Image 1 (cartoon, rainbow, N blue to C red):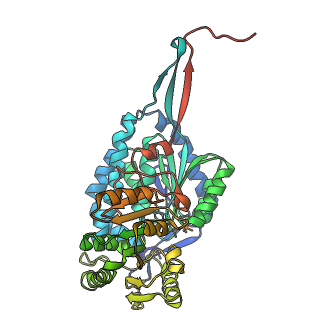
Image 2: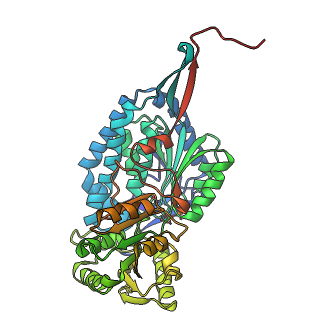
Length: 489
Ligand code: NDP
C-alpha cells in the first residue's frame, strides 16, 4: 500500500535520533491540496510512542544542557547549512505538505527555518547570567538555565518554519523538544529532526511525533514537560494554556488574529497595494498575522480598490503549486476551504459587496479565487472573525483618531500596519496600535532578528530574536556571602 504514495516518509515519527514506526496508531492520510489525493500516510502516536518520545527527550536533556552554548550552537549552525544546501527538496516537500506554491516555499520556509537555526546557533554561546554586587562584598550571580523538556505544537500553514522557530531557541538554551506537527501537514518537521540529528544533535534532543489534538494534549499533561509552545487558533490556545496551567508550565502561545492595515491618503498607493497583497494573499491568505481589515481613507478608496483588483487580475497566477511560475496555490485542506467559503457567503448575506473573486475553481484540489469585499462595516462577521484564507475586507475611514480606534476594536492583537508618508503620524499610529507586531509602509515580514508575537487574545510570549531566549530559559539567583552568616538568635 505505502509504495503507491508519492512521498512516503521513512516512518511516522523521529525519536531518539531515528525514524520510528508504530502502525497500530490511527492512520493519517496526507492529502495534496492541489489534487485532493493522498500522497503519504503516517500514523498517530500511540501511548507507547508518546512515552518513548518523552522518555527520550528527558534522558537526553541533562547532557545536552551540560554542553557549552558554543557546542550546541555549532550543531544548530550546521543544521542551518544543511537546510540551505537542501533548500530545493525541502521546498518541494513543503509544497506537497501544504499546497503553497514552490515560488513561495523556495524563499520562505526552509530558508526561514535556516535563519532561526543560524541566529540561535549564533547566540547560544553568549547566553550568560549576571553579577550583582551587594553590601559588605556579598554578591549574587545569576545562571540562565534550561527549562527541561519542551513541547512544540504546530499549525499547518508553515510546518518547516514552525518546527524550527520553536526548536532553535529551545535547543540553544539547552532544552530538548518533542514536536507535534498539525495532522494535516506531518511531513516537514520530520526533515527538521533528521537534519538536526545529522548536524550532530544527540539522540533524543529533538523528536517529532504525529497525531491529532489528543496527542498534543497528552504531551502537555505529562509532568516531565516544563514548557509548551503552541502555534494555533485561539480556542486551541485556551485549551492548551489551561492544561499547561495545571502543572504551572511555561507557555508561548502564537494564536490567531484579525489584524488591521491603515492606508492614509498620502500613502504611496502601489506600495500600500503591495502591502495588502502580502498581508492577504501570500500563502493563499493562510497567515496568522494577515492584515485582513484594510482601512482606506475615504478620498483614495475608489482608486485603491480599482488598482487592487487590477493587480489581482494581472498578477495572480493560479495553478499547480509545483510549477514555479504559479504564485497562488490551493487552500491547505478541505475543511479550511469549507470554512472560508462559509465566511464569503456570510459576507454577502450581511450586505458586503464581493467586489472580486471568492469562487471555487474546479473540483480537483482545494482552489479558491482570492476575494475582495468592499462596503464592509465593523460589525460584520467577516470584519470580526479570523477567516484564515484569501479574503480582504476594505473599510472606509475619515480621521486618524477614528481609524486607530476602530483598528483596535478587536479582541485580537497579533499585527497591525500603517501606510503613510507622514513620519510623525506613522510612529504615532504604530505606538497606538494594540498589537505585538507592527509595520510601517510594509507588511508581514518576520525576520528572525525581530520579536514576533501577539497581545490580547493573539498570544502570550514572543518568538524569534533575543526575546525568545527568556521564554526558553529561566534565571537562577545564587547569593554568595563573603562574611559569616548572622542570625537573630
Ligand atoms: P489549531 O488550533 O486547530 O491546531 C493547532 C495545533 O494544536 C495542531 O497541531 C492541533 O492538532 C493541536 N491541538 C488541537 N487541539 C489540541 C489540544 N486540546 N491540546 C494540544 N494540542 C491540540 O490550528 P490550525 O492548525 O487550524 O492553524 C490555524 C490557526 O493557527 C489560525 O488561528 C492561525 O491564526 C494560527 N496561527 C498562528 C500563528 C502565530 O504565529 N500567531 C502562525 C500560524 C498560524 P491537530 O490539528 O492535528 O488536531
